Every structure is written in C-alpha cells, then in structure tokens.
Amino acid sequence: MALGVTFVIVENDPIASRLGAVYPELPPGERAVVRVLLDDYPFAALGSLRSLAERAGVSPPTASRLFDRLGFDGFAAFQAAVRAGARDRSQLLEYVTHDDGPPGPGRAAEELRAGLDGTLAALPEALCHTVGALLAEAGSVWALGGPLSELAAEYLVRQLAGLRPGAHRVPGPASARARAVLDLGPSDVVVAYDFRRYSDGTARFVRAARGRGARLVLVTDAWGSPLAAEAEALISLPREAAGPIAPLTHEIAVTELLLVAAAARLAPARRLADLDALTRAL
Image 1 (cartoon, helix red, strand yellow):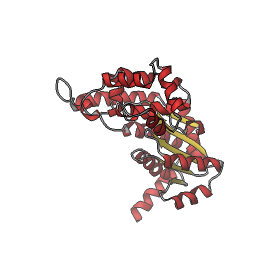
Image 2: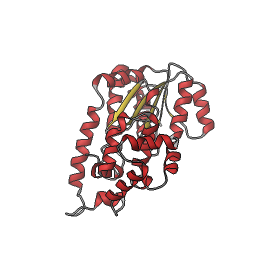
Image 3: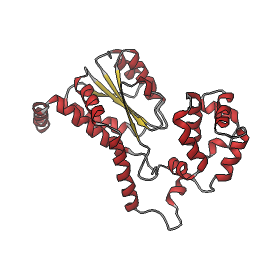
Image 4: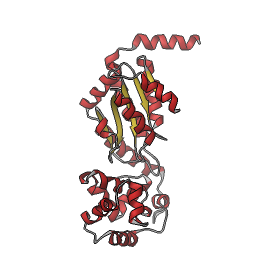
C-alpha cells in the first residue's frame, strides 16, 4: 500500500488510480501528462488543457489524446469526473486524518516493513551482482541524487570510499561539474538516484557524462525516471513510503546491498585497516 501524500490519493481516488494503472502502457507524451496530473492531483486537472500540456511539455492535442484513450468525452468530461471525486481536505490531511483518529507509529512501522520487503524484491541477486561488479571495477564512481535522495548518494560514496579509491560525490556548482565530466570516460560509472519529481540537474549531468562514455547505474521509482533509457543497470523501486515522507529507508537498504556486492569483489580488509589506522592517527 502506497503511503506517500500523492500516492494515498492515487489509491483512494478511482480517477487517479486509473491514471496510475494505464501509465506503463502509454506513449511518452501521454506519460508526461499523467506524471503532472499525479504529482499535483487533483489540482493539476482543474486548469485549462493548454496549461496542463505546457506543464507536461507536450502539445494540447497530445494531452487531449490521453483523455480520449481513458474513455472520456474530452478534457471537460475528465475534469467533471475529477471534481466529483475530489476531497475537500489537503493531501497531507488525507493521510493523517481517519474516522478512528490519526494512524499511530505501529501502523506506519507495518507499512514501512511491507514497503521494504517490496524494495528488496526489486533488486534481484543477479542485478545486485552486476551493479556490484560495476562499482568495484570502474575507473571512478560518481554519485548524485535529488533534494532528498542525495543523502543516499552521499552514503554510497562514504562507504564505497572505504572500499576502493576513486569514489566521489558529484559537486553542486556547474563549473565543478564540468571539470568532473571533462575527465570521464568509458571506464567510469555514474550512480544516479532519481525519483519523482525528477531532477533536471541530475539529468543534465548524467547526459553529459554519458556523452563522454561513462556508464550509468540508475536507482529510480516505479514511474520510471526519464533517464531510464540511458542506464546500463536499472533498479526500479516500488512507491511505498512510511507516511507523508519519501522512502529514504528503501534507498539506503538497496545501497547497502550494492555495497556488500561490491565489497565481495574488492577484498578491502587491508584498505579498511589502513583507513582505521589513519583515522586514529589524525
């Protein structure tokens, strides 16, 4: 069961649930419209068709085809259906308010555990070993993420740097990013954590790095980052979260598994011992 603010409404609203169900079968332009609708549901559906199309980066006829495909008699009929099902409360209130009172931490823990099980199942052993080999054998590894997933990227780099040299966080300033991309090549690997709402900055760096030949490991969500087609190794996590927060726990759990797989190929005992000795000395 998805518990993120948007996803609770997706589960409880028949129109939003329908959008989510058809998403994997849609062409790219119509997928972009669905992402806008579900990122800001129901409000994104209540403006003009032209405004919705502009937000999605598509033409109005492309947006209109989505509603025809869904069986509505045009965008106005779709809006009427959304209004009929819309709730008066905010998205966050929709999660925290129930007839029997707000959910306690016990329920959140159960749903977090269920989401974690789904997340671990999304990383088959063969894929884990593939990514572990990329992390172990790359000339250098560069990691980056979005506003919250950057914490998972930071964790990956901190741990990987203890296992092998050449593990780096992608810097923030454009000039520093340009210097990093300048020296990338086919032996290097970029690990990107990219979740809704997908980061334009992450996309720009990844595409520049791919232009230099670097390989991409992409950790994303079930909706599929726009970078998915660029990835040599793609890890798609389910959408579950523990309440109205992003599922950072899931990203860290997957990162742990990838680090274990990399460590199995590196035999880093000597390096870790030297690191401990240096840490004590400094």
